[in-house]
Image (cartoon, rainbow, N blue to C red; front, side, top):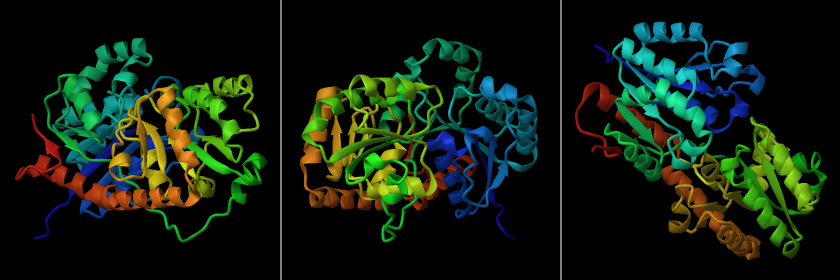
Length: 399
C-alpha cells in the first residue's frame, strides 16, 4: 500500500515579482518540496499591480485576486480566509506561514487552529530589533490585536540565521526552532550576458566597473549611508559606477534621489528600478562588487544570489553573513560609515583577478550550503518530524 504524502501549504502575503525576496524564496521552497515527496500547496493574494506572480513549479497555487480593500488594509479579505479554511479542512496536514503583520498571516493561524493543524512560522526578519522599532506604533497595535496570538500559536519557528533564532528566543518564545537558510538557484555561469542589455537603457554604465546594490529600496537598507560614503570616495575611483536597483513601495527612492542631487552624484549613481529576468541576470553577471549596507537582515538573499554569480560582497554585521570572512569571499563589517568606507576602498583597490578569485570562493560556498536541494530536504525532514515524530532533525533547536 503506497505511503500517503504529507500535505503542506505555504502561506505568504504576496508572490508578485515586484515584492522581491519572499516571492522567490517561498515559491522556490514550494517547488522544491515536490521533489521531496510532499503534496505542496501555496496560498497567497494576487496583487497584480505589483507585476506577475513568480510561479516556477507545479505546486498547487491558491491565489484569489487582491481587492481594493486588501490593497490598503494589509491584505484584509474575508472571502480569501474562507478559501484557506476550506483548503485546510479538506486537503492539508500542516500550514507554514511566512511573514508577520499582514492579514493572510492571521488567516494562516485561524486555519491551523480551527482545523487542529500544526503551524510553522517563518518571521522573515520581522522580529529583528531594527524591524520592530520601525513604525513601532503601528506594530504595537497589531501585536496586541493579533500578532502576539499568532506567534503563541506556532508549533515551530523557522529561522534563516543564528541571529534570527536569537531574536525569537529574546522575545521569550520556547517552541522548537528549525535553523535552515534560504536557498538559491545556481545560475549557469557559462552563458555570458552582454552589458549592453543595461547600458543601452543607462548609458552612464558604459565603460565602468559596477558596484551593485540590488534589493528593496527601504530605510533599513542603509542607502543614505552608502550615498554619503560614495560621495567621499568616488573621485578616487573614476572608473566605478554605483547602481541602485530594487522595488520601492513607500516612496523612499525620491528621498535618495534628492540626496544624490545634494551630493552632486547624478553622473555617478544610477537608479535602475526593479530588475527582473534578463536585466537582473545582466546586472549580477557583470557586477564587479556587490554592496548591501543594511542595518538589519534576517538572511539577506541578495547576498547569496550575488555570490552564486561569483560576485564578492561588502555588507554589515546587521546581516548574518560571517561566512564572507570565513570563506574569504567578501567583507563583513560594523554597521557604520567608516567601516563601510574602508571595506569599499579595500575591495575596489583589488585587481579584477583578485575579486574574481574571491567570487569563485563565494560560488563554491553557495553550492555547498545554500542550494535549494539542500534547503528543501531539510525542511521536508522538519515537517515529517512534526507530523510523525521520531529522531529530532539536527537543524531543530529545542529549549
